[in-house]
Length: 505
Image (cartoon, rainbow, N blue to C red; front, side, top):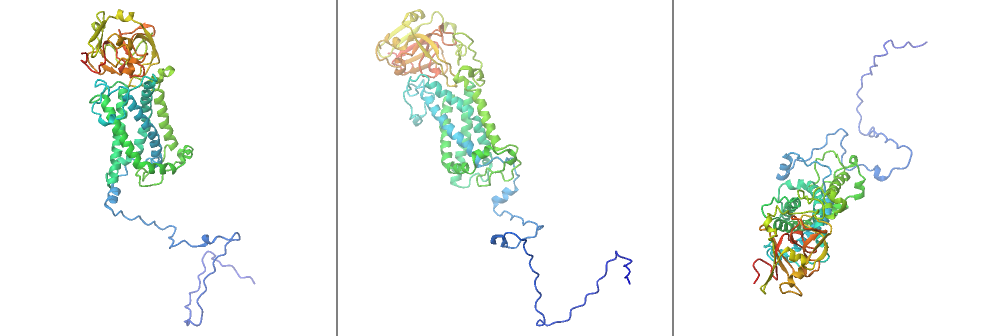
C-alpha cells in the first residue's frame, strides 16, 4: 500500500533533539580524523614554490588594510599637513629633466664660446674706447688680436650665437618647468652639499633667465637695462656658465643614471594612454600624487622641439639671408632701408645718431693725422674721389645677430691714407672718429692688421651708388670680419698710430 504524501510539503522537517554523547574516557576512542585535502585536478605537477604557503598569516579578502604609520619626524609631519600643491604632472621626473638638460648641455657651451669670440672681435685690449667692460680683469685672459680672415667669421659667430640663444628658449623654459618643484622643497638646505647644490641651482636659474632675457631684448634693440648691455651680458655670462659647470659636476652621475633608466625610442612610441609616472626617488621631481596624463612624454618633447623649430624659422633669416630673410619676424624692426643699392639693413640711422646737415654737407672735410710725426692732411670729398679707388665685397654684421649679404664697396684703402701722413709701409693702427657727437662707438680703434688688409676701405660708394646718409655719407669705414659698430659711419678724422682721443703730437 502506498504511503500518502505529506500534506504540508513546505514545512521543513524538524530534526530530533540532539542527545548528549555518553561520557567516554580518552582511551576509548582515538582523536577524530582530519578531512582529506581535496585532490588537485589531473595535469602537470605544480612546482614546489607554487605549493609553498606564503610566509606569515594571510588576512581575509575583505580585511581592512593596515594603515601606514603616522610620520614621526617633524619634517614628515609638516609635509603631511601641507596641501598637495600644483605639481601633479605625471611627466615630471629625472628622465625628462635629464633629456632637456642634455640639450642645454650641448647648446650652452656653444653660446658661451661664441659670445666670448664676439667680445674679442671688438679688440677691447687695444683701446678703452673699444672696451665696454673695463673691469673684466682676469676674465679677459683669452683675448687675442682679432683677425681679418676669414672675412665672414664674425658674421657666422654672432649669427650662431643669437639664433641658437633664441632657439634654446623653449628648451630652457621646459627645463625650468620640469624642476620647479625643487624650488619649493623643505627645508631649503639640509647639508653643506645640499646648500652648494641649491646655490648652483639659484645661479643657474637666475643667470639663465637674465642672459636669455637681456639677449632677446638686445636683439630687438630694446635697451631696457640699468646699465650698458655689454658689461651686463658679459659678466652675466660668466656667472651663468660657472653655475652650469658646478651644476653639471654635481648632477652628471645622476643625469647619466636617469637617461639609462628609460629607452628613448620606446618613450617616443608611448602614447598618452600608456604614459605612467616615473618611479619615485629622492630627486623631488616625481609627483607623489600624479594626475592622469593629458600628454605623453613624446608629446612634451615634440611640443618643445616644434617651438624651437618655429623660432629658428622666424630668426635665422636675419643672419642667413636669402628667402629666409622674409621669415625673420624677430629681426629688429623700424629700420626700413628702402630699396635700391642702399637697400640693406641699418642699425643706427643718421637721425638717431643726431647727424646734422652741416656735419656732412659741402663743408665736410676728412682730417688725417700721423700720431708722433705731426703730419696732418685735410681732404675734401672731391679730393678723396680723385684718389685711387678700390673695391671690396664684404657684409655688415651686427651684435644683434642680423647681417647682410656681401655688399660691393668702393673707396680709398686705409693703407693709402696712412701713406699720406708718413706711413708708406707697414702702417700702424688707426683711431677713427665720427661726426656723431655722442653715443657708444662714435670712435673706435683699429689694429694694424686691419689697416693693412687691402680690403679695408674708407668707403664712398656701395653697390654702384653713393652712400646714403643712413649708411654713412659721405664716407665710412669698412673692414673685413669686424662687428658692424666698428665700421664707423660719417667719418671726419683718422689718426694713424693712435688708440684714443688727443694722441696727435
